[in-house]
Image (cartoon, rainbow, N blue to C red; front, side, top):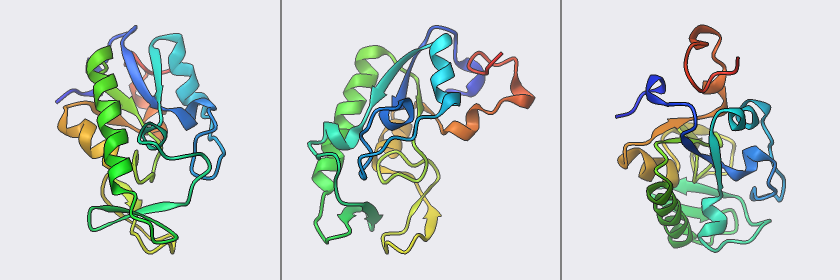
Length: 161
């Protein structure tokens, strides 16, 4: 398994497209993050939106994970679209040689370690989104934007200087 110290300058990094200012979130917004954008100074950033790659439109219904299924607020089961999108991002990772992904927190696709519980009540639980789980199985290092705050690790290649 790769660690933060293994990332070399110039390496490709998969990034949730919404974190780069691309309007692809379920609600049609983006959440541009300067910490993520600054990675472009040292790495080739590869924007990905697994939900769009899986065939879903923007905007779209909110989705949460429940017992391994991606369920929309309106009750639609979007699991297959989420799986297709994750498979497409896996292919992009293989094609580009990316070993790291910076992903949108709490997303049913991209969330790392914490996702919403499927009740649409705002309750968070431990777990990964579908893409994060697939990329972890591939051995990629998964980071969220908070992991890029590097005050204690300024020597690492992805940290801002």
